[in-house]
Image (cartoon, helix red, strand yellow):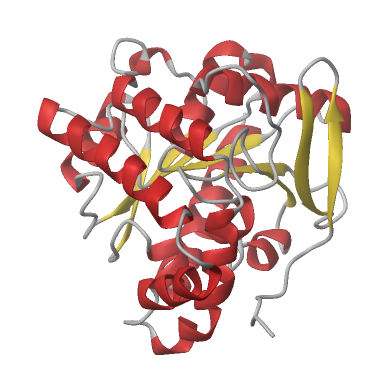
Length: 283
């Protein structure tokens, strides 16, 4: 039997005119603010946030969804667009009757969180941006590498299940305490729609929020992964510098630290979220 981490209740939610998506929910303390967890490219909400659900729920109502084409997220014939993911998130908030949230975006989830603010500003009380930047590829070489990663992901999906489970175990091989989750990691990665994931790689390569980042007027925390090999820490810090009043919280980890080393990542994530929540209600 595949070893799985404990996960909160989940359900399918119909987004009128858009499709069906999968959502995890934890109620949090009475009257607590709500965080909306937005995962990264090729991942799922569970894969990105499994270790953070319960710690965040000590302070917040927690909502997490799978993005379109990812995990158990909605399926559509349309090309993947980051803006559509932001609109999906806004539609989910409407469906759940939630008026304001703190979007928490990791990697690709960062642009989704930023576009949620830009396109649906009244719904956003603050922002927490992790392992992300205002431009995720700064050169033609990096854009080519991203597309190659997308093609590699499609190829990996063609592997037989035992080989895919072994690949997932290797992803966590350096973290002995997490190695038993390898088969589950592989299962989560297999849930995405290959065409959408490849489209998403191209979207990420085009992403650029530099022209309007200075207009962001909500409290913001930036969680910098200081050993990140995919999103340079300098670019993460440049994003914090560009957003007025943004605070920085450092995690000594690589891009996948949320999966491979949650004890390093989760405490800083919770601190960053609490700081934004406190600033969002301050006079």
